[in-house]
Length: 369
Image (cartoon, rainbow, N blue to C red):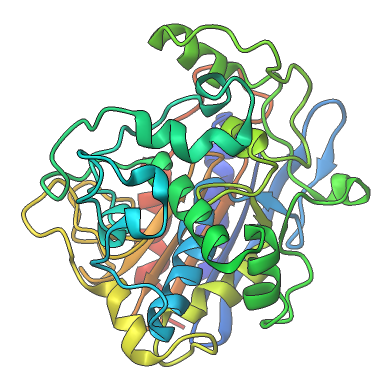
């Protein structure tokens, strides 16, 4: 009979063998204990193979939204420097216009602000990062704020800029001082040093996915689009354009260190927040809308979430485009982490691995020591 670790590893190895992603690292933890973990496949396949290991660093993509941006916002909410129902225009002057004045911090954090899901800011600003907030504010709203959930990178990019304006610091510096150093993390950062490259899982060659999106949307070609293998630098085009550190993407880390950050969202485990603040992450702030959302996180109560069948409805989680996933069950004090690099060494279209995430989370949640 297969051991519990073998069941999880066997599940993921099957999907590696079918070519959905070249590597995976997983970790299942309860309280501060790691119960199951393994590293599978090759973190780099091209230009040469590098065997994966538990310390492999992954581009976490949109896990940046909860693990950095939401955590930094929550700290400021605790301090009274930021309030959920304050107008974004109070902090970002670019949003002080008729259709944007009613947008609140809560609506940015719950993806209910009316903003489009994505736009190529590098094209909208003509390659001038300092114009990013204005470019977002200039976009037409797609729905009345508060009436729908539409997952939006742009809302979290705005939050990242807002945090920088408030603190007069770069987002990467804020994260380093308030999160990474506070938790003694040494393999978590924005913009990894080139010397670390061989320890990082590689991503796509040429950013063809975004180039294809730009063509399909009529946005046009981007002259400075990267054609090289994206390895050790952020995959997301807007995050790269914004200097590698943005509110929506850019974070790199290992499964072990993601576990340390994830614990900060559990009232019984956190070192960076109060237990009262941690209750916000399991509270459904979008009842009756397309998704059940708390601040920064999707709740397992959301239909078709990647939580799987056995996590409690107020569990909260997030996916990353590169193939990453974190779910946190506040009742079992359990953290489930799955890191893959599905964008590497694969022609478009990339594999949709949501079913794999559900399988993994369902199996991991059902296992008992």
